[in-house]
Length: 212
Image (cartoon, rainbow, N blue to C red; front, top):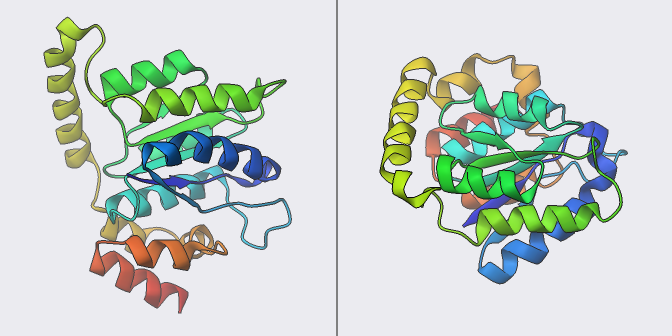
């Protein structure tokens, strides 16, 4: 699985801690981690939580990533921005129980975490435990198991509702504020990671045109 990490500007100083914790769990399980930044508070390309959502939508809908790990101060803003995008199902994960239940019940493709609120001593251990509950378990297996069938049915219904209520991602990136779009994809390593993994030629072509 291709896992993308996205951090917004207020928490950019913690990128190394978060990235190291994610790699420590995901890579031994065979997953590929791409760090889309921000990498430090000094980055020229600055991501807001709104841009986090837009970038997550681009990565997931183009299949440049299979799962997005993101967050902000409380995790709420990035979660809301992600869920505004077509095809993105993002859960707010604070602790390992959240991660386990989100994985088993909702089987989403993105998680948002608080990287300021409650981020104290041994925070990296909580990060690793949360990532482990996401990446070690089969998504959508159900909890409790006897309700797995109903949960799968509800996930399918939710996908249909979201498809009916959202535009496709190509339309989104064509109609969203273009300065916002350029800022969302202006990261130092965006082109390096994205174009090597993108499976949607139309999205890739449009972004190349926008960024020059």
